Length: 572
Image (tube, rainbow, N blue to C red; front, side):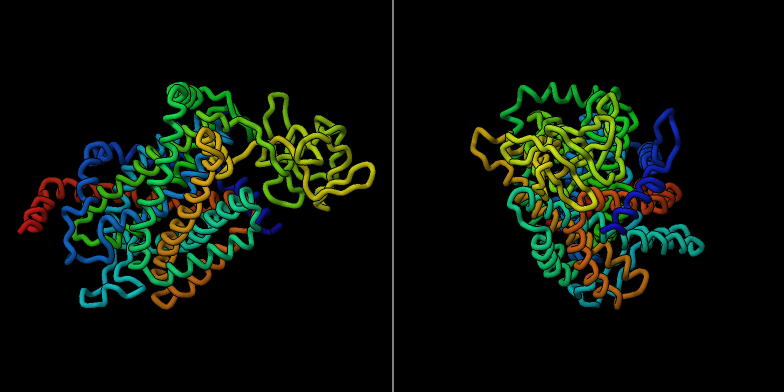
C-alpha cells in the first residue's frame, strides 16, 4: 500500500503536473498537447467532426457492411467495444471528480476536450485501419487470439518508418501498463467503492467477483468480447441515460441556471470543494481536460486498437465511426451526469459519512483563509475539542481531500468527538480512554458515490432507489470497460512478444483487477493519470506527423464515395 501511495504522490508531482508555469499555476504538458493537437487536426481536416458526423451514424448502422471484408468484428461491434471502454466509470465517477476538484466549470472543458477529440479520434482510427496487421484470410476468423492487430504501435512503425520503432515499442509497453490501471484497476476500484458505500461489502469480495466475471469473458478473445459488448454497451447506456433524463425532467427549471453556472465557472471559477487554488481558471481547465481525456480517450491511442479489428478495407469508413465516440461519451452522457450532479445540488453538499480512520478515502489537509484545501502529511496525532481540531491552523481530517468540519462518535451526530486521532494507529481515542476505528461527520462526496447521491435525490419523489441505477450502471460500465481494455493490452503484448504472450497478459490483467479493487480511490486514480500523461506523448507525435496522410485518405474516400457501391451491392 505504501509503495503505491509513494508512486502516486511522486508521479502526480513530477509527471502529471509537469508543464508550463502561468502566474501561480502550472499548465500540464498533457493539457497543452491534447488541446494543441486537437486544434491542429480540426483545422487540418477541415472540421471533419462537424461535416462527417452524419456519415458516421450511417456507417455504424450497418447499411454498408460487407462481411467478406477483412477483420474480426462489424463496424457496430468495433464501436461498441470501444464505447465499452470509453462509456464507463469516466462518465459516472470521472465527471463527479472533475466537478469536486474544479467546480461546475470543469464540465465545459470536458466538452471542449470532446469536440476536439472527435478529430483526434478520427485521425488515430483511420491510421490504425490503414497500417493494421491482418493475417491470411484463410485462417480461422474466430480464433480466440483474433486475426487483426492494429493501433498506434503499428502506425508509428509502419507510417513513420523503421527508425521510429523504438517509439512504437515504448508506446506498446506504456499502454500495456496503462491497461492494467486506467482500463482495469480504476474500474474495479469504483465498483468496490460503490459496493462498500451502499451495501457495506468488503473490497476483497467485490474484487473477487468482478475479477471472475472479467476472466470468463476475456479468455474468449475478441469475438466473444465483441458479442458481449455489443449487448452490454447499448443496454447500460440506455438504462443510465433514461434515469438521468427523468431527473432532468423533474428539475427542468434548474437546467438553464445550471448551464449558466457551468459557462460562468469555466472562465471565472469561484466554486469548488477540494484542491489547492480552487477558483483559479487553470485548475478548472486542468480537471476538465484530465477527466475529459479519461472519459473519451481521444489521443490516448487505446480505442484505435478496437477499431482496427473492424471488417472493412476502407480506413476512413471506420474513422467516421470513431467520430461518434467522444460525442456519445462526453457531449451526451457526461453532460447528463454533470447536470444531474449540479441541478440536484449535491456537488457542493455535505453528506453524512462514516469516516474510517484506517484507510478508505481518508486524507489530511491544511485549510487556508479562503477555505481551499492543501494535502498534508499525517501528523503523529490531531487533537479535537468538541468535534473540531484544537489547532484550527494545523492539519485537518479530510475525506476525498476536502476537510471534514465536525467529527462525532455516533452516526446520529449527537456526541462531538473530544480526544485525539492517531493516524499511525488508525483509530481515535477519547479522553476517557474509548477507542474508535471510525468517526462520523458531514463530508463532501466524490466519484461514483457523489453521482449516486445525485440520482438518489433526483428520483426521491419516486422512492429511495434512484442510486441503484448508478450501482447497476457502475457494475455494467466497469466490467465492460475492463473487458474492452483487456483486448487493448493483449494487442500490445502481441506486438511486443507474439501470440504466446497473450494468455499470460490476460492472467496478470485479472490479478490487477483484484489489486485495484482494494487500493484507495485517490491512489488508483492518480496512478492512472500518471500513465495517461506518459502514453499520450508518442501517440500525439505520430498523429501530428501523419496528419497529411490522413487528409489524403479522407479526400480520396469522400471523392470516390465507395459506400454507394456497397449500398447497391447489398440490395442485389
